[in-house]
Length: 186
Image (tube, rainbow, N blue to C red; front, side, top):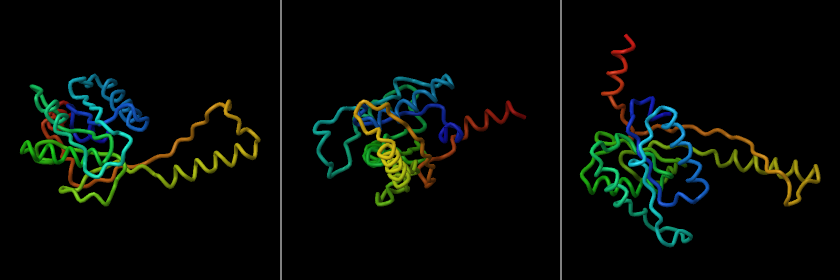
């Protein structure tokens, strides 16, 4: 929604592992929102399965192939959602190698708001409230212990926590769409 409100209509999704539950859920949200606005384009939906997914990564993932897939389209994306900030950092490298500027040529947004990433421009990211998630999980566990319902057959319970967009310099307003929309609204 954030990118949509900034005027972007050609929004890509980049992930190195769509099977990971967290990335899967983020992808579902991406696809659902764009489908609701008749703007989902499967050609802008890119996921690669990199080898050794279970090993910690020492370097940013190589997103060269994803950048190639996205920017070989006749109408490439104006913005890309990376499944997390680490993948966004790899995407930065792949975009810079293609001489694409962030955010002038393409906007990039990530998830997790990792402040230790030294990216220029700084990455706009969705801050996932890890401490709040831990607190809610602990409350849920204590409630189950108190109720005596710790059996493995118990019905799963979900509790929602909310995060927020932390704006930095990696997203630009896509003026063509915003200006054309304002013509219709005046």
